[in-house]
Length: 189
Image (cartoon, rainbow, N blue to C red; front, side, top):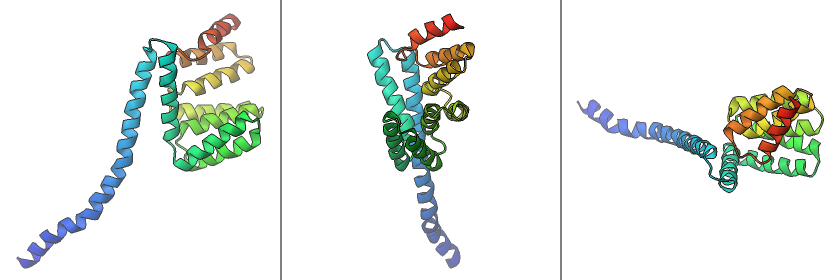
């Protein structure tokens, strides 16, 4: 009887680390679920945005959420890579994005950014592979679809470029320059 009583008293003490571990693991899951719910809401709002200003504000928040899905170190690498890409130091940008993908292989934005670096370096095959991975991780990545459309157009496949652009605009109807690009691709296709 006494052993059973001691076991009942000790049981909650034994479960505290298990419960604490379970709760600490569920906190990132809750944050991920919250981020996913916010993305869903933003994508719904993007389709019904009353004007360009609202749409661009939502786009900015979506892009921020995509970046925030990665670890803090990855975020720093993505920012540095973007600066290197803008400065046209493409090899350095590629190194940054490689490291970002190593740290956060589930970051669609890291794959998209590296695809842009590959494209800038004149390696469309590698860029296309990275875009495919970005779209596998986040099928609603309108930026990856736009980049894919540009690569397809450069390769001379106007019909594929048009399809990719239409898919991007289905997600983000007020994408900057999207309507003009769509008209041009329709003319070419």
